[in-house]
Length: 100
Image (cartoon, rainbow, N blue to C red; front, side, top):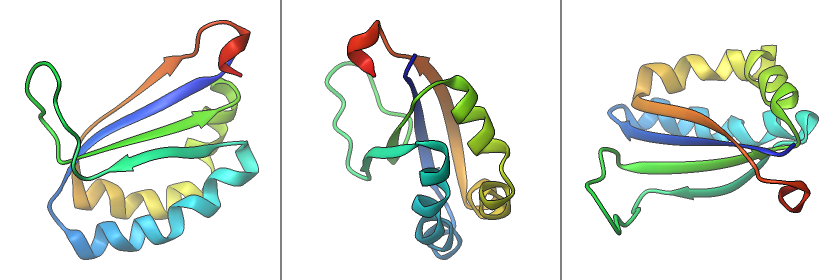
């Protein structure tokens, strides 16, 4: 079942985050991941935003997501993301086969 990773972050070290972002996309491909959205100007429709940027990723299943997040290529660049941002990342499951 398709899963989506949703990041809600604030960036406090732009140079380090930009270095991470430049290398990010190539780490997704081997795991079937894709970047669906990355918005530094999200609009709150209800409630208050507690972040500056929202990122939406899609993976074929949770196993693919877990393999990506633990991969040497991603772990190497994630050091910069962790140092440059604060926020949260959540994993949500798609609904039915229509999400695939």
